[in-house]
Length: 99
Image 1: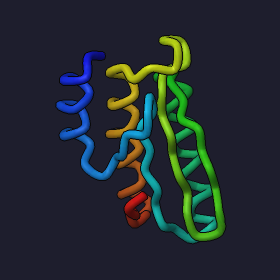
Image 2: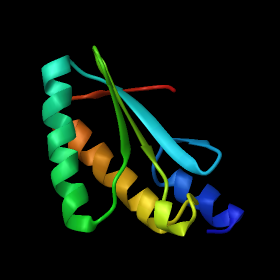
Image 3: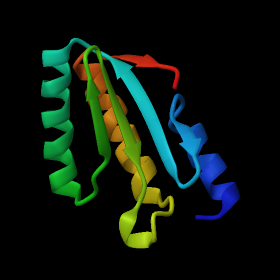
Image 4: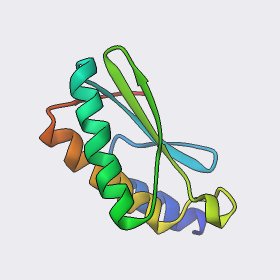
């Protein structure tokens, strides 16, 4: 994706922050709720064939996304997954945090 396309795509997933060639977002959620959230996200990831890195901590879960097959660069698939994660997180009542 071009720099302009990345900036435009970021506008469609508010709250996601770009760090180099990945986008990331952290959510506050009780530990066991976070585990359920991660399993739900993993089910969707398996179906679409695209996966985030997940960092589970007590009280938070962070998702970081890049496309490994594209040389660890951002692609439209990353932003699609970010939007899906936002929807799933909302369904699990996870609270978005600023990274």
